[in-house]
Image (cartoon, rainbow, N blue to C red; front, side, top):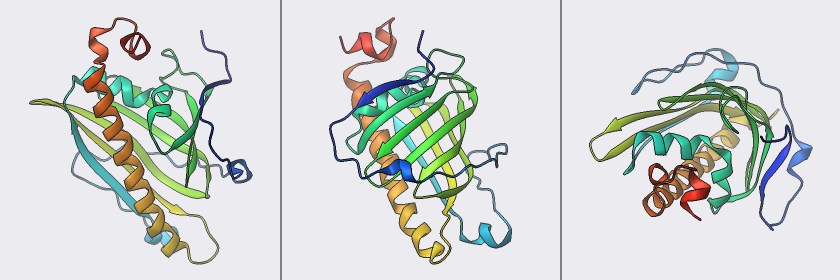
Length: 208
């Protein structure tokens, strides 16, 4: 049983003090279906940017879902410096209610899992971040396709800056796009080397 606060993995890398920034977000709605995006309205919504990536991984849908929704795997991502499981969910360390902090080089996020439907959907909201973000929606959706699993990773946000929010949000959009692709590529490589479905104990036993 995981403790309520547990450092899953810490990488020895420079820490420029990400914990100085924090913002509480309470916006959460049902995810739009594959191929569709939700439009935000109002002054803040006009500045929001969407990252909507589809990526196919040559592995069973259960394996892909378990890898990408388990924060303990993110320490393998080259741009991630630290992963902390703040509160475990209702299914081992993941599941509904899980809260985890992921610190990367240019972005730090505290994510709260609000919907967990294995193996097709994980929906989350960002409760803290640096730089500060206003978050509209975030989810991972999984679909079995010939040859593997299609992953759709969707998020919509803006940088909460008093000035130049638009340019900063555009820059952060490219940071998030690059980060999503690196995570998905890392998952694809690791699942090719260590298929989870062949190891009853999951990822850790597969790599033993």
